[in-house]
Length: 337
Image (cartoon, rainbow, N blue to C red; front, side, top):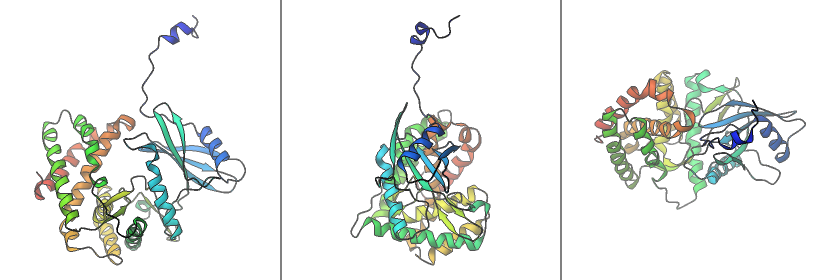
């Protein structure tokens, strides 16, 4: 049998690709050509997820490289994150930032079966995830730095900038995928559109009432900050950065702390440290549980949307009941359901 038969090959359907994996050899070649590196460059795929992350090593230095997944965002929207990180670097804020290429650009694009994808090389964040270095004192320091980041974000946006709730409500983009995700759960099919609509209105009311907004990380949790043995803190993974409520950003971290089943003391220390730099307003405190609920709702909607690329298993078979109960209990308490 001739397995190389062109007549057989021509009859094969062309597969639709939701998420391809870039070979590390391609990464190494592109980094060597585009960046001011030293000697031989090697690359290894670290993990696949919402985006793919590679370890890149030259003769002297270790880096991280991100290949963005094809999402509902335009491929060039990554410039928002990278420009903000460059601003933070200029202000000596401790974040893992993009390494400029020879021409000064902070990212490049490559063609893939699912469309153009963005790639960027980052400083390597030293140390370990905070979840592996738990300390109330460190949590307070992280909180204080996080508040400084928020103040720098307002500075970066510029005097008179009008922050909107558009990005804060981008769970609506994911809502159709969420409803498909819970196709066999009639209560969820009924309740989630109601919650989304009511949350839209409530967030706009809070914005109109002057609840502080700014440039936010939007996915900050104990795995997105590293701490080394000397206590050096480095913030990372700003992929979701955008305009949002500052208190939503704070509660994202607190919710993540609880989701990892860490002691509430670390979330409390984080908030105390934060308030040492930027105290919460009365309306922020009053709506703390609302923002905790919104975090959970945004998570399940985002995971449903990305399931075409990363799979359904994590939520479908383990966490839908827990997340649904968490969201709906707090939505009822907040008058959204």
